[in-house]
Length: 172
Image 1: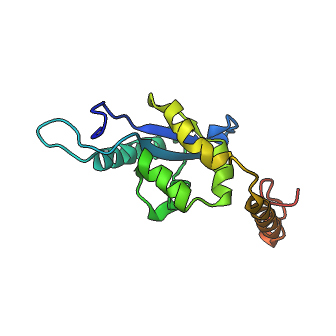
Image 2 (image 1 turned 30 degrees about the vertical axis):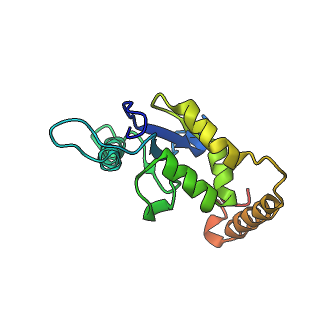
Image 3 (image 1 turned 90 degrees about the vertical axis):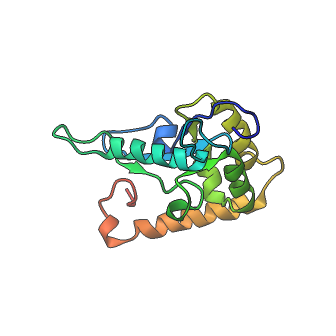
């Protein structure tokens, strides 16, 4: 990395059912890609770490999504990353922390609660980074309103006619 001079690794973060160890046969996998520091790769054609890890991330997604005669490994969902589909595929620790502090919404706190580093040697550093976002130091009354909003949204979706027999989103 530019600051530490240490080698950088892609950290694949499992979110949702993957992060919580609750996958089932029909689950997709919610992933977030992060890396510790900005900088450039070594070699004759150096790349910014951002570009390098974006390319690597696209290859990981393509490999997991690839359909063969045997089927596919997993459907990959990257929408839980900072800024969702509009954001970069990979974020540095600094970019992730900046996003969580400035833009992180209440529902994202719940999502990051199940986050688990699946690869990389910096999993503990990542946990230390997200911990203050997920577990606030002081009682956060906005969280109550956020929970009510999420509950109301789920209940509203469950009332839709096409969700009547939907086990996950329907009324039961």
